[in-house]
Structures are given as C-alpha cells and as structure tokens.
Amino acid sequence: THAAASHMAKLVLSRVPKLKCYRPPFPVYGGLLQTVVAELTWAPSLEYRHEVIPLPSMPAPEGSSCCPETVPAGEVSLDWLEPEDGKKAIGTLLLVPGLTGSSETGFIRRAAESATRAGFRVAAYSPRGRGSNELKTPFLYCAGYTEDLKRVINHIADSVEGELYAMGYSLGSSKLAKLLGEQGEQCRLDAAVCLACPIDLLSASTLMRSTISGRLLDCVLVRSLQEVRDAHEEILSQHPGIDLDRVESARTLAEFDHETVAPMFNFASASEYYRYASSGLHLSKVAIPTMFLHAHNDPIIPGDAVRMDDFLSNPNLISIMTHQGGHSMDWFEKLGSTSWSSAVSLEFLKCFVDSRERA
Image (cartoon, rainbow, N blue to C red; front, side, top):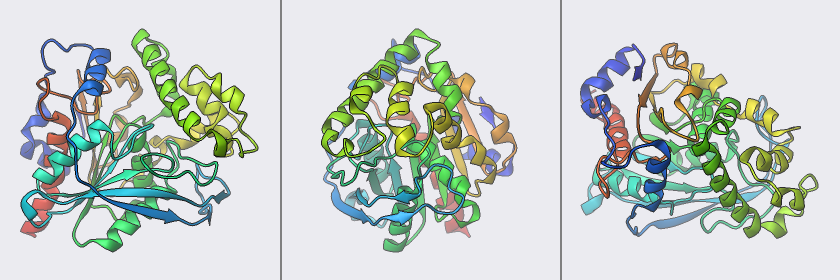
C-alpha cells in the first residue's frame, strides 16, 4: 500500500520499483516469526571508527514537548564507516537504532554494510548508556526526546562535507520523525527514512497488548529494558522520582515507561508521555523528503495504528505499508540474504543524491 500522491512520491515509485512488491522468504510467514528470525540472523563484523561526543548540560529549548527543564550532561557516540574501496562518499548516512539498540545491533550493522557498498559514509549512533557509552547521570532517552539527536546531527553536518541523510528504526524512527517536524525548514538533513515508526505511541501501546504475538513481544522488550536498568542501577537510583523496586516489578512496556521514562521526563504517567512524545503531531511540518516503511502484520506497531491521511496531507512524505515483514527492521526476501528494507531505503535516498548531481 502506498500513501502519497505528490510529485516526489511518483518520482520515487518510478525509480525504486522494488517498493511495489515485498514477499517474505518461505516458510517464514507471520509477523511474530518474521520478527524473531531477523533477531537470529547473522550480521557482519565491522571495523568502525569510534567517536565519543560529550554533551554538556543545557536548558530545555522553548516549546519542547518531551524534555526536562534542564537536560543533564552526558555522552553519546558515533561509529563511522567509510565507503568500500576508498571511494568518495556520495553522502553521509546517520543510522539511529531502536529501543535498546546501538551501533552494534544486528540490523544496524547490516544496514551499515549495505550503505557503504552503495557509496555512503555511515555514522551509526549510540545513545546515552548504550554501546560503550557511560551513563553519567540518571537520564537516558525516550521515543520523543530529540535534543541529543539534534546536537549529533549538527555535529555531523559541521564535520563532513556533502549531503546528510538519516535512517531511524522503531523507537529511533520516532525520535527522528519528531525531530524532522520540530525543525521543519531548519533541519540540516536532506532526506530521511523512518522504519517501523510508532507514529501514535498511545494507540500502538494499546494495540500491541491486544494480540498474543504483541503480548509475547511486550515481555521480550521489557526484559531487554530490565537489562538496561540492571546495567545502570547504581546511577539510576540517584533519580528522586524513580523507585527501582517498582521498576524491577514492571511486566509490560507501559508499566516500565510509567516507572522510569515518565518521571525522568516530568510526565505524570506513561499515557501522558505517549501523547506528548508521539511524532504524529509533527508530521505536517516535515520539510524534507521522508519515507515511512511499515508492515501491516507488525506485532509491536500494527498497521492499524498507522493512519494514512498523515501522509496524504504533506507532499514531502511517502508511506509504504507491506502486508508482511513483522517488526524485523530488515524485511528479508530470502533467509540470510540482504535486507529488502535497506535496499529500498538506500535507493530512495539515492533518488535525491542523483537529483542534486544532475542539478
């Protein structure tokens, strides 16, 4: 399913024919199985160049909808990878991982390898407390907090020449989509892709708990978050609003968010956080070409949680909704093969590389 009738969308669909059809590998059918298989799929080992980016404390920007009054100091990082065979990069691609991800996450490494083969320079992002980043204060990140990512984008834009693009995954795509709308014409990115983006966090949370597959994966997500809590328990215990015993007892993503993210970002509840953090209210202001990829059978972000009118009202947006794919981030076509989502995303971004070269 394609949602967008703009000149940009017609151009993209004509130049990226693979967008018109996705078929999952036999016999991997169903959103749950497609999600699990992707997690178990091999990913390449990459020789990144690691860069730590210190972030000083800062006041919340005026009008920010998901930010504490004072953003604590901390550190994030980028892992850089240059195009294969020493070729000149056609642009720089920022990769933003999901819920508990980093530059070492499997689908990030697979995307990074595909991107460098396509001629892009890659900067793979790891947020506070993830990868090898030290958590210096009891403050992490969330689906709607964009200030760290804005500073990282400015750092990259000031550091390298040429166009700058971004691909965000799941929670990372939520931050990216919200940032694009917040910055509008001031955004320093040239084009972007958001994969499995929870555009409306509240409805996505509700729908995920309505299916057996969703409830199973909710448990898996909470376990991964509990590992983050365990790794940073000492520093998180310093937050006056967080009761670690209550956090440890959380059995759903919503319960975990209620006990950690809500107090960390000055919200009264997880539901209030979901309302303010959602990117949906910002999509009308996105001013660069941006493609959204969703799978209708995604057990975490079901297709029914994505409303297509958001994409019909902004000519800079195009939505691609496949029937299959799950929450895999890769949309594999064959077991062990390269990622369909990486292939179509890179071809989408190259549409704008090519148009600038012709100009």
